[in-house]
Length: 314
Image 1 (cartoon, rainbow, N blue to C red):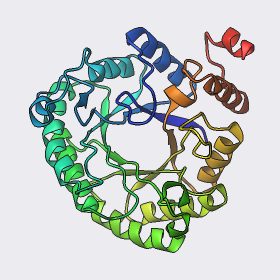
Image 2 (spheres, rainbow, N blue to C red; image 1 turned 90 degrees about the vertical axis):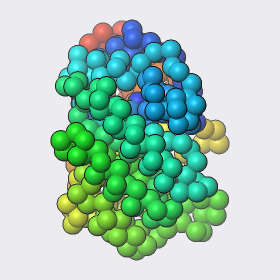
Image 3 (cartoon, rainbow, N blue to C red; image 1 turned 90 degrees about the horizontal axis):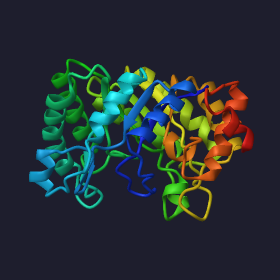
């Protein structure tokens, strides 16, 4: 199983900005296309007061900072140029951990209207990403996902809606002993998927929150539940390493290969990643990403035009 989709993390919460402009992003899209990536998902159009495009909604609702460039337009133009499908990531107040998803929903409904009016005519605009991340059905999450998804689909004539929840495993919890069991996960996500079916099309669970020996079982549960409820199952195979004492270096190639193999065996339909430009690209600010890129290309027999000399030096 190859990685054929990636998030674009330009409003970062916990990794550094690479401060790329049009030239650097054009080069990056060309590399992504060369290794078989056909889908790019902007992880969020805004976070708190930060914005990727000049949004009047976020300016009014959140007193947002006006960005120096329209990154959404740039991503759409580059996606069209390189024949990559672009999914628009919605807004995140970063407040829902203390209250509910209701405020995010209230703003994101307006943001979706605004974004579709501004960018919906782009042939590269192929879907929506509801950016809120969740591990269990709490804080009204399921209902908010369903309402947001239905709104986006009606607005855009049925374009697909993607979510990327996580498995509440031991790597995300202060108390590892409180990690969700496979049986609990199957029960709760069966209920969630039943509630969002028809409003959400694709579920791509993050794969980094459980131990490697547990991953296959959870992936198989995810795949079976998605099939049962009429959803498409992808995997969000994280290309950063959660096992290190620092946040976050590119992952060891052996770990990434294990996760991709487990996803293939579980019947997952597509692998996307968080996130190619930072953790796997030969253009990344992380030197370790260059080695991961080379190992990946060697394993899959991928040749990237223009990077032969650079790869030989790694």
